[in-house]
Amino acid sequence: MTTLVRGVGLRGATAINVITMVGIGPLITIPLVLAALHGPLSLVAWIAGALIALCDGLVWAELGSLFPGSGGTYGFLRATFGAQGVRALPAFLFAWQTIFAAPLLLASGYIGFADYAAYLVPGGLGPWPTKLLAVAIGVVTLLALARGIGAIARTGIVLGAGVVVTLLCVIVAAYAHPTVAQPFALGAGDSLWGGLRTGLGAALILTMYDYLGYGQAACIGDELVEPRRTLPRATVLAVLLVAVLYVALQIGVLRALPWAAVVADPSGLGQHVGSTIVEHAAGVGAAIVVTVLILVTTFASVYGNLLGFSRIPFAAARDGLFPRVFAHVQRRHRFPDVSLVTIGVLALPACLFPLDQVIAALTTAIVLVQAIAQIVALAVLRARGERAPYSMPLYPLPALVALAGWLYAFASAGGAAIGYGLVSIAAGVAVFWWRGNHTRPEWL
Picture 1 (cartoon, rainbow, N blue to C red):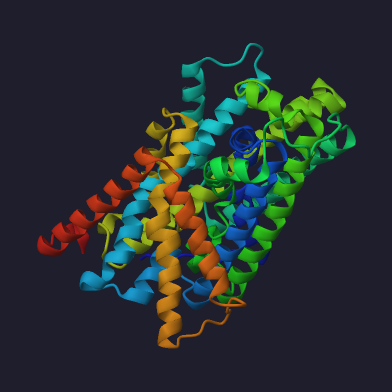
Picture 2 (picture 1 turned 90 degrees about the vertical axis):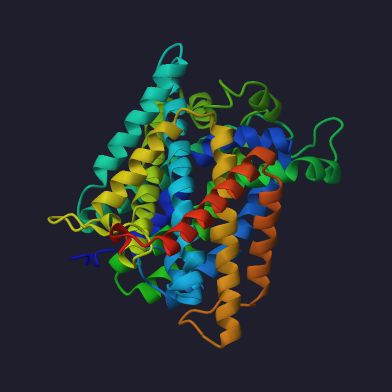
């Protein structure tokens, strides 16, 4: 029996999207964005990322209202292109690519947690204690999701509220005690077009990484209450809320700290921007409290990510595209235990790699078989005359904006990351061909 329980309403779905999006992302990538786009130019990357996320979120919203099942993109591609023969290749490739991309995204959160926790340790953590802490958080996250969906949703709502409170604490501290006289002044030798030309691509990869997660609730469509209504609302609400918080946070950082000092000290001031701002405004005690809240926020993000990702191999296995063991559901709490453990365990060795490499690799791993594939799927459905309960406004403009943004980010990721994405896709095509020509019982 592979039946799941519908226990997540609009609040829970929005909270899952929000906690998945935020996490440690903006607080550890701000110095990287500032390094790519100096000073106020960094705001362009955050606003552009928000625009792309909103446009792409409208794609998720329309497809989610039409195909509200488990697996998110997997379900969209299966329903659009088919689940038999070569037509199943797009859906299979997405499920396959999840095995490569999901552990990287989770590992980026675990690494961020461990790096930020160093603020609480006098003298900081050494390299190996940091890596071991990252792995330990991965294990805790896995154990925390081995429960029923109702309990998970309630925890998600609490964590979602904590995420918003944490960012608001940092934002209020930044605005309450500004120290930079001209926060929006360009640096010496910088120019608007010159800076954007050389640094927008690298910065946009980082901000789009920070916005990822607005479609996470679509991955648990079989566990949502009234999913055709809940998914579009939860997606758009999450993007708008997080975009406002991110832009306000970046403006606050520019007002509270000299951006050049943040860039010059990436492992100190840059690594603990939020805590440093609160420390300057309210003292060490308050900074420690906010640091703990930031760590809770980080945990919330990986919690939401692992929840959604674990449902993708489950959905593929239920359709016969993945080994049937992934369709197994835990008897008591009714969650896909094999899929959850597989994704959770694969994320642990990825914690041993540098954060920037992990972010670039996971971006290229998802662009082609998720973001672009979904936009193509929506165009195919529209061409067929199929209409969803929710239709994006101004179609096809939002879809084209999202497509251009993702292609630009992919091209800016660097040769190694692009190679990782292409090789993993090629491997998926080879496995799909092998599966089609060597049918084995365990795949049925």
